Length: 403
Image 1 (cartoon, helix red, strand yellow):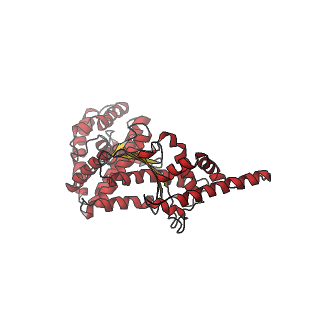
Image 2 (cartoon, one colour; image 1 turned 90 degrees about the vertical axis):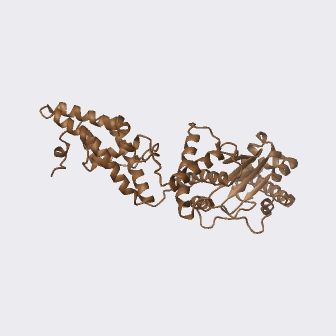
Image 3 (cartoon, helix red, strand yellow; image 1 turned 45 degrees about the horizontal axis):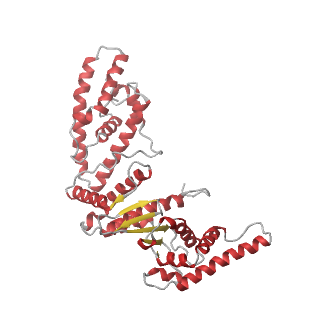
């Protein structure tokens, strides 16, 4: 199912994701630890550094060769409109306005004046004024001719707003504007970040970049959900980078999924559900088990892929989990050998509850860096799927593990 339907929001989603990835790279490349970025405030990305505010309007594309930016480009005029809309909120003398695009500039375009700070913008200003007047005149002519649709609809409001600024404000706006063409698209950002991690041995840069991006994406999510402040400071990024490098250098395990939620498409193994059903587990308990099983499974996969020798560590920890469970399950079996099925289910349910609430405190962590309870909880569910652990006293017989 790789065909994109006509109502797909892929491009818009990629555009938003690109804002976050670009902001990460932008902040990382700054040298001032007091630098801070915001997403979706005055502009797509806003950088504050050394008393200066930089508004970054991003134009993303996954095309192999995006159409060049020209004076007539809708993307250019939408950018100008975005800046004009917030002009009253800006101190232009302390603000820069950046148009960031993966496309290039048309070779003969007067927009090239925006590539450097000292370039004269007079020719560009005249070109923009003439283009804006042309657009509005052609719309007026079409309206007078009573045509059903007017031309240049995507640019009309921007052209009108630009002309309404007047010469002085137009000059002031362009004096603070810059264009950054030929930027990397979203599929290339992580590789660019990895290349810039020159303080890390080359063999580890890709892994460090991957962990840094995952941490960053979560900060963006929390910020957009109002669960953390909008501002993300460079010192946070640098601190997390140092922690990741230290963990990877010492080959420490990093719990990447302790707070993550399984994707809607995730379907847990039927055996997990059968194990819990044997002891009359609730829907909520099943939901928790599925969530933590996914988290543990994802961590195991990541750790093993990063370093295959960790499989032995995971296996040894599984042995430890199984031993702690076995002592309790043996006692359970002895205590309810002559009891009714209802009693067996009830006592088995208590063991399931133990695996969720008490086991994370009762068993040793697989690594000092893995402190959240979800890994132990989820690992017990992983083990329950292959029958190595279970909750009902007779689960092996009832679920066919003894065949």
